[in-house]
Image 1 (cartoon, rainbow, N blue to C red):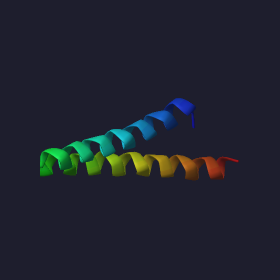
Image 2 (image 1 turned 180 degrees about the vertical axis):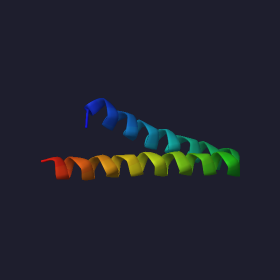
Image 3 (image 1 turned 135 degrees about the vertical axis):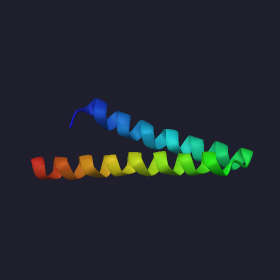
Length: 57
């Protein structure tokens, strides 16, 4: 997997964490939920990339 994809997946997870934190600070449950979803999506993509790389070598 290319390094740019790995960075994009990490950025997505970090974006989700930031959204979740700002939602918690403002009391917005919707923003917290969106942040959690983005964070999980990014983490899943990172895990899939690691698995693909493990079987590739």
